[in-house]
Image (cartoon, rainbow, N blue to C red; front, side, top):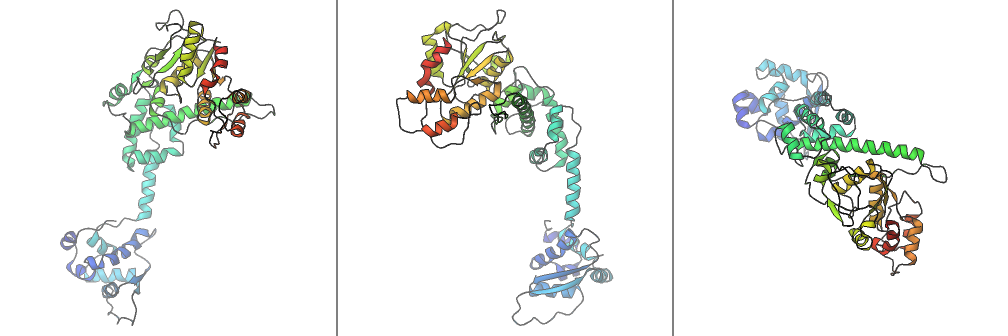
Length: 444
């Protein structure tokens, strides 16, 4: 507990008390006496205190306070100890008219004493009540039951239980507006919270909403993977190990899955020959690569004509360029992630999957390529496209370079248990462009 100023002590404490126990030189002694009352769970006015490691001045102050004569210091002693009968000392202070008790005397000098245990219990009760505020949105209710909820709420509310109810109510209001259809984050914030910047990155409400959305999406992905694993077994009859979702995701991607636009023109999705239904307002130019922004994908959903049709997905934009040059309008539908899929790429792949497309993925035969492949396959249920162990071995056999250029890694390929070990054995990275001839056979 922070001590009060000396001016406060002089104006509110008894003058005799100040002479006996006041002053900066006895501040450490007063703190030791205060800890007795801060830590006691029962009646702190009873019992005995054992004070040790006292200086000579502190020892003398305690003995004078108890009405005892100061003892002559022991030869060579650097510290002293003393036994304090709290009940007896309370009677002495009352009889002298100095204070009603030792606790009262200490509070006169340095302010109120708070029982730490009781304060902690009271604070925990307030937190429990704060975390059980009635909310309407189902995902928020579910999130409040997670182990992560109390810690995040404490951080976002700056350890103030009183602020939690307002924070939860604001997040609840935002979540009830979702999913949106191409609404900007600023517009959502202005319409729901009255401040266009209330959902900017770093704002408490935004952080809470994102945590709820990410937990909800992770649960949905886990359920889909569990269903898939239960029905998809390998040759040994054992279920395939579920792919792991990335530990962290870009804020823009999480908002995008909820139909909210953040930096809506960044990293548009590259495609070639994606078919649309006749009544669709969006009609791609046949044979010519194009880009779709997150704004286009969310504000005016496109009527894709891809049911039961293969849509190929590659990692590198050079593949799209080569396919357009070699095959033009005859090329099969092709989408490029351009490395790790960002918001626009993720939304496009999910829309195609929901429209019934059979997504087939190929990438670089290196560790980053396997990581990207796992992300895409988990995101939209894509299957490997010439991206297995035998395909890698064929590529190595025709590779122009022979020096090992693959670093050690623990990345695995859940779709082919032999792929990663074989890559470690050969130690050669194979760029997607190096096998473009075989990819063109399928695209043509």
